[in-house]
Length: 192
Image 1 (cartoon, rainbow, N blue to C red):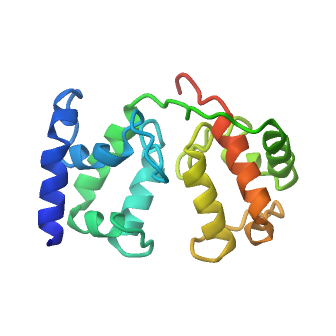
Image 2: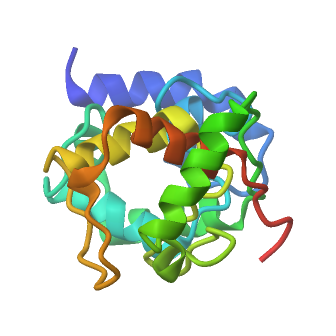
């Protein structure tokens, strides 16, 4: 199936979702199909309520193939700058809803100690709400968070140097899960 056919299928499949939303950009229907907060599917991130500047940056990275994750690097190929800006702006105005998680208390405690040790809040904020091009991580999908932490530690995704001593490559498997559960169980802000 061609890329255009895949996108058309996703848009048509998501049309009923988009119809219920107020003024979403045309491409949003395909995005919502996987990224809707209500869906909480496997390892995809929650986009609703994420910062517009961060979303613009990541969609541009996908389009320019600086970041490759199927199907995002394919979907983004058909987006121009205006389309990216419209999607990022629309998703950023949607309410953020924290992930529903039955967290392991011991992992949460271990994760809290790790984010304090690595000073993650220096960039992501004390409440992990992020800002501008720094993503909101409080209440994010824990499977997605763990996958990204593994990608950083494996060199498959770039994590900017922070000057805080954060070394993503030092995180072991248990530490990754602990950080992901800690961040996922944090309450997202009710409003920015």
